Amino acid sequence: MNKVRICIFILTAIFTQLLPARAQFAQDSIIDGVVAVVGANMILKSDIETQYLQFRAQGNIAGSSTNVKCTILENMLFQKLIYNQAQVDSVVVTESMVDSELDRRMRYMISQVGSPDRLEEYFQKPSSRSRMICGV
Image (cartoon, rainbow, N blue to C red; front, side, top):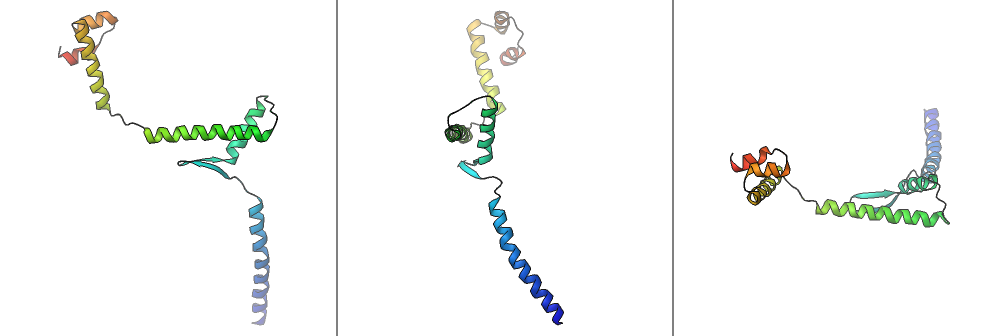
């Protein structure tokens, strides 16, 4: 029984010594980090590094890597901002809305030329849609 307690004590001492070392090791090896967040979109440090490596691979030589990376971050922020605003402003257009607008425009063009046949002749293209609108 004493041997079991001694083993448990030794194992506990070993694990308590190893855990802080592993935690310290985990903190030293950061895989990636969030640099900025725009809406629900993140910009990661690796994204900036990838863009920088592509910049350098294209043969571009800049004075300071810090300035180039700042410019890259600025461009990425602008792109994410535009993308986020597009998501906020997105307009949902149904098929019936498209059909209704197309019918309205076809009726207008037919009224300008006189008949569906004249419209087809004018554009030199057949239009089954113009016949459907006019009931021909």
